[in-house]
Length: 136
Image (cartoon, rainbow, N blue to C red; front, side, top):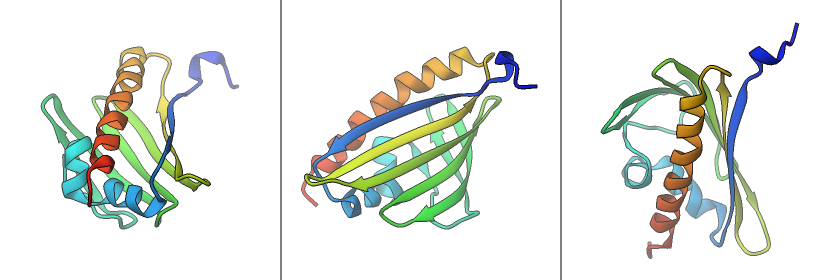
């Protein structure tokens, strides 16, 4: 039944970041910080909270799926026919935090969205690191 044509793909970005999980968690969950590296939003770290991410190109409908402070954050990401799930995982290391983002749920016919996400998340990560690099 699991024909190759139905296989879902994921975009994954992993970075070792020289800050504790608490600092990164703030940047992932505070609306004014999310706006600086991702998009305008009305996010709240509460399961089932619905929120919208707004960019110049349009908006993303999201719903919070999982919140485990300083460890895991997961939300649905629905935009332009793409129904996916974004999961952030924070793992403390000796020198900071291993930050992993996975966006899962790209269909084989969504090559453009898949490539766009691969490019986009790299940009978002760079901006996130700039936000983290500022003194609190």
